[in-house]
Every structure is written in structure tokens, then in C-alpha cells.
Image (cartoon, rainbow, N blue to C red; front, top):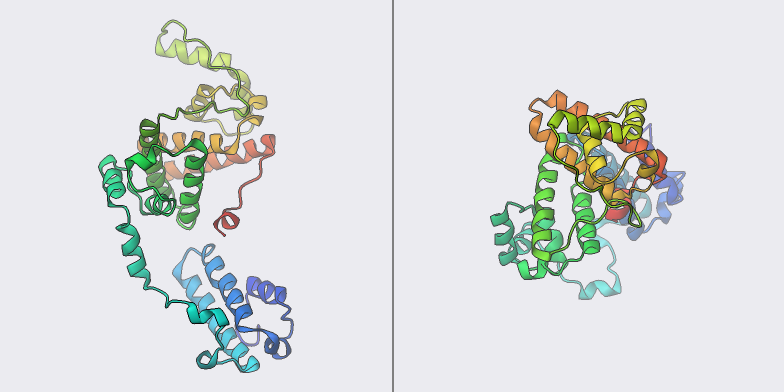
Length: 312
């Protein structure tokens, strides 16, 4: 592969997984179906990881060069590829643009309602249409578990651009408004943040001056504050968001599930990003939230969800 200028560590591993160690000898045994899977793994899956177009172009050139060598060794030409028996019943693939246009017009009542509420996002709309939701009456029937799954699938579709802070902010702003919209329609209330229930929020005390109230909150939840400072993830709005959901200490953090933590981080990110005007400040906040998430995963034992696996 180095001699031919097509070496890539991930490509080498993909080929090896199909038993290709010596291309000159092993390519002859690779079928068209096997090559299609190699091509998918090497392009579709790898493209999710490569963010710049130049890297994608370089990878694509390597793949086409490898394909040329495989076709020479296997004798399989593009013009004489044998069709599977069931291919006779297959319809020609539809134009991607036509498919997209059809999807966008599949539920116009839903689209208009989402646009009116300021929650229209093409990926969110796509997931809703795929699940059979066509108007506001259908949205009222969405249960909490279905809502969580819809949100997860939208993030899978947006996985490629979600690492960009500006794109993340735009998506989170829409998703926060979408949740409020859905809860208003369905009547489903936001559940307690801790798994298996938990202590209800403390009864509301008499009104205090803002500074007195802030000091009282800090004192009442100093275990959480000290943990955050010790782990260098102190952020006042994040602290307040945790306390508002009944999290007062490291032990409480262990009981927070992934969906709930995503909700907390999303809320803090949207609120703080709306206040921070310069990119450097947003990046510092994003880094702090990522570090906090890592520390939470350590104490909770919850591993990061594999978004690629979910996409497949």
C-alpha cells in the first residue's frame, strides 16, 4: 500500500478484516458484495470522522485506486457485474434531490406548524415524518420515551457538524424550543432528574435578597460546590442548574442518567451561549462543560454512547 501511495491505517484494518493481507493474491477472492461493504466502511463511515473536504478527497482517491487494483485481480468489471436474482425486482434508485423534495412535502401541516413555532429543522422534521407524525394532533401522542428517541436520532443525523460550537448552539436552541412546544401539546411534564425518583425539591422559602439567596444556595450545597472546584469544573450557571434538579453532592451525581445530564448541559449551553458574544469565551465554556461531563461519567460509571453505532 505504501509503494502504491494508498496507505491508510484504517484502510489497512478494513482490508485485513476481509482477509486481505496480500492484495495480489487475496483480491481475486473478494466478491462484488464484499467490495461494496469495504467501500461503505472506507467512505461513508470514515467521512463521518473527516471534517475537511481535502482529507475526504485524498481518501476517496486512495479508495478508487484500490478498487482499480481489485477489479484487475478479480476480473470483475463495472460493465459485467452479475445481478442478484432479486435485483430484477429492484426499482431504479431515485434521485437524491427528488427524494429530499418528496420528504420535505410529505407532511405540509407539520412543516407549517413547526415553522410557525420556530422549531423547524430539516433533520428533526425528517425523523418525525419517518415515524408517521404529520400534524400537531400526531405530536400530542408522542410519549416521553418516544420523544427521547426522536432527539437521539436527530443528534445522530447531525453528528458530523455537532462539534462546531456555533452549529451546536443553533441546534440546541431549536431543540429547547421543540421540547417546550411538544410538552405544551402533549401535556407531558418534565420528569425528576434522578433515576428511580428522588427527593422532591425543597419547599420554597420566604423571599430573600438576591445576594442572600445566592449565599444560602452555595452554603446548602457546598459539597457539590467543593467537588466542582476540586475537579476544576466550577461554573455558576451549571452549579445552579444541578441544584435546581436536586443534585447536591457527588453521590447525587451518581444517580443522574444520561438523558437527564444531556438536558442539564443543553440548558446551560443555550443560556450561556446567548450571553457570550466572543468565540473564545464560548470555546472556554464548551471545554469546561466537556470536562464536567467526563468527571460525571467517572463517578456515575456511564460510558459515552457510540453515536456511529446508533446511526447504523
